[in-house]
Length: 150
Image (cartoon, rainbow, N blue to C red; front, side, top):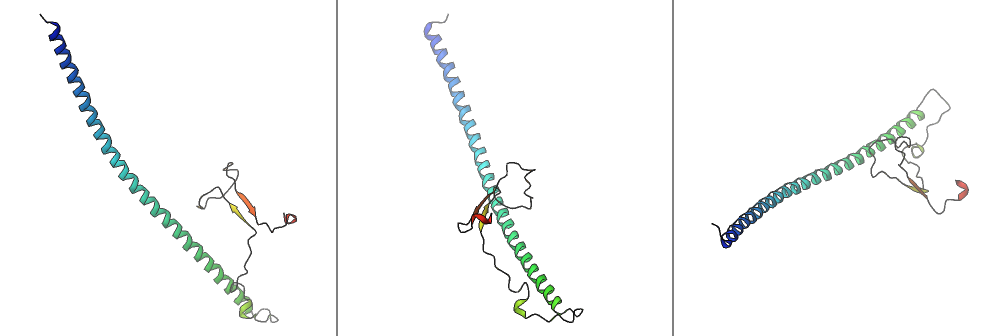
């Protein structure tokens, strides 16, 4: 026959075993979560590095492409002006001096304002308002632009 003391001992033993099992399970579960966190942190850092490199590559590619396009426009303008100056089909055309050839000395425009786009970068996507209705830009004109010019 079980006495009250024996029942308390059994109950304490069972509760101790269950508590130990819960603590053991929690410890291993936390260790597994920490390992997954370390893996995900390493993966996140790796992906951030790759993204940074890709962003830098795209930026340098765009700079090089725009520089090449600018040089091509200047070269085409120079060649067109020289071919017009050397064209023998119009005997009245006199060759223009070198400083007046279009493309050698580009005309500099003074900006009258700035446009702030909602796009962080240009990827060749056309800014068509019917495709992206929420896309808006802000035009800020310089203070010296007269209202009559609008």
